[in-house]
View 1 (tube, helix red, strand yellow):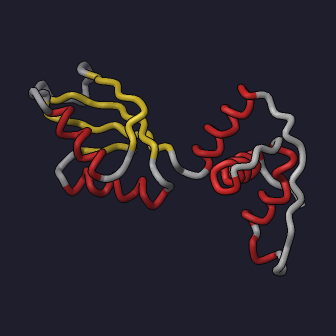
View 2 (cartoon, helix red, strand yellow; view 1 turned 120 degrees about the vertical axis):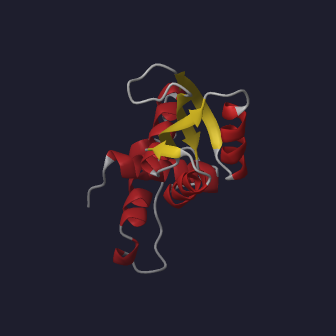
Length: 148
C-alpha cells in the first residue's frame, strides 16, 4: 500500500500533536495508511513507528505541509471599508470565530476596489476545513465580501 506525501505529513503532524512522538516521515507510513483507509484494517491493529532521524528544518516544513494538507491554513481576501477601525473590526470578528491570524497584507490599489475600500489578504490558522468554512460564513453573514 502506498501513501502520498500529504498523507505522510498529516500522519507525522497527528503523531506529534496527539502522541507527542517524533518519527521520520517514512516511519509514519503505517499511520498514514490507517488514517487514509481506516476501514481496511481490522481492530486491533498496531502501527509500527520507526526512526527519529529528521532534521529540525525538515520537521518544520513537514509540520507546515501537514497543516496545509489538513486544511488548517485558510488564505482569503476580504474587502473592508477604508475607515479608521475597519481592520480592527475585521480582526475582532476573526478572533471571535476562533481563528488565529498568521499574516495580514493591505492592498489599497486595485481596479476591482472602490475608492472607499481596502482589500485585506489574510492567512489564518483554523482547526480544519469545517472550521475554515464557519469562519468564512461568519464573515459573509456580517456583510464582508470574502474571496478564498
